[in-house]
View 1 (cartoon, helix red, strand yellow):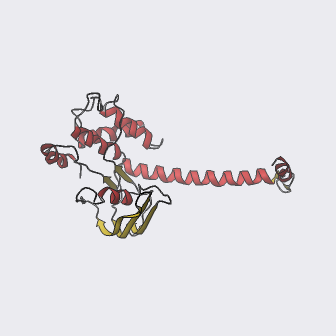
View 2 (cartoon, rainbow, N blue to C red):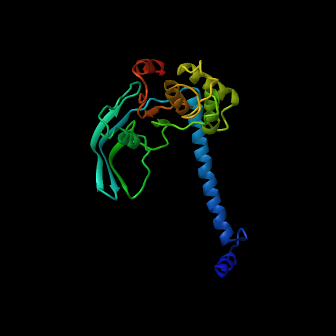
Length: 248
């Protein structure tokens, strides 16, 4: 390997007097830097639009969507088969069905949360505004059982999420305003300074925890939001009140 390196670095570009190895490395570094700069500019553009609340409406469509997974015991299993549907902007679309019907699996596929592997096979059309959907679209995904730091308050949890997810071009004042707006819109003002807690430490209630999970994923006002089992674990009163607290 050392001989190969010395042989490569012995060849130079006369016009630049640079070894081939260095020249290739510089070219690759330039390409990587250019790609990173383009991605950063795109992120900042999206973030700026998100913070200002100016997000273009998105229509999500899926046609003949199938999801097949391979398991050791059962072999190939058809989890989803020829699913077709549409989610329009400004509307709430609910997926209802018995346990094991594939609701979570469909949400995971629509939200691009299924990891790519040889064991997973996804077929069909999935588009956003008639274009093929990618993870670059501003979206949020709220899992059924989100994880939080139990020692942080509700406000600190949202501040941490804002600092972690928004680019450096967003000022501290903009982040603070976004956090406070979410606290008010999601009905978290009364528990804003309470510890989140966990199974062993007393903290906020189940309904407040659900709203916090949505608020933390809505940092930046995404155009699409996927929520898995939003009312699971809540009593009938909390379920009836919960939709009233979600911002339109």
